[in-house]
Amino acid sequence: MSKSSKTWTLRRVADHFTSIGLLLLIGFLAAHFGGFGEARYQGSFRVIDGDSLQLEEDRFRLEGIDAPEYRQTCGQSEAIWPCGKQAAGFLRNLMKDETIGCKGVGVDKYGRTLVRCSSPRLDVNREMVANGWAVAYGDYHEEERQSRTSRLGIWAGDFDMPKDWRDAHGDVIDTNADHGLLNNLLAKARMWTAALLNYFKE
Image (cartoon, rainbow, N blue to C red; front, side, top):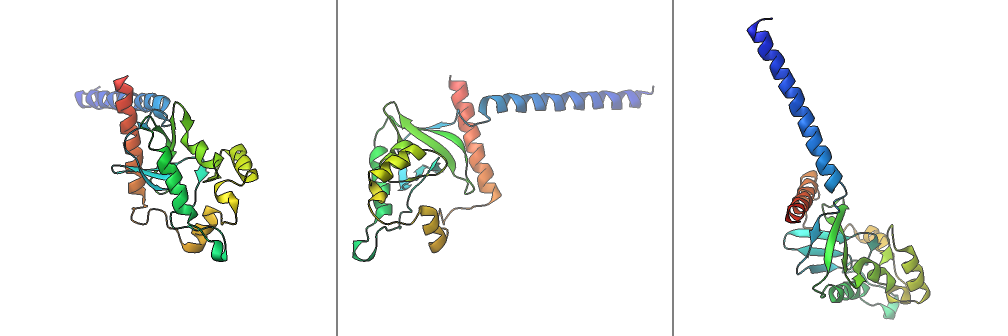
């Protein structure tokens, strides 16, 4: 075998082991952070509406619920009231608890991090549904049944489901945001970075 052939063979072997190393690294990271369960956020959250938050440049959506849009109203004729603003106000009061932190569980199609927020004494997502200020959206169905029976929050009268209201008034979610692939990837990168930082702090 010539010297050039040996060099070529060695390079192929090196490339092979490099590929294996990368796959093992990806597997290790996926095992630790695949569900984004280690990405945690805490601080002075700004409430956008009944299920949306912002912390500095990061945008979040409460997972498992759907609340009225900020501009959405409920009721009919003379009994119309600003249920969207009231839902946001209820969430704002919950988020005043400085012990509340949010755990990332994914990313939605708008590039927002899906989170479950809680403190040692309450589950924010659950409280929004249990008090009638959001509907179940993949979770918290028993809480929705109870708040509907008790006619709490938006269940006190007539209202459009948030999704139906958005369909009728146009997609009003984060109208200033870039909804493209790049924004989605950046959101995921922020989650992985936070996860890695939390991991190495422990």
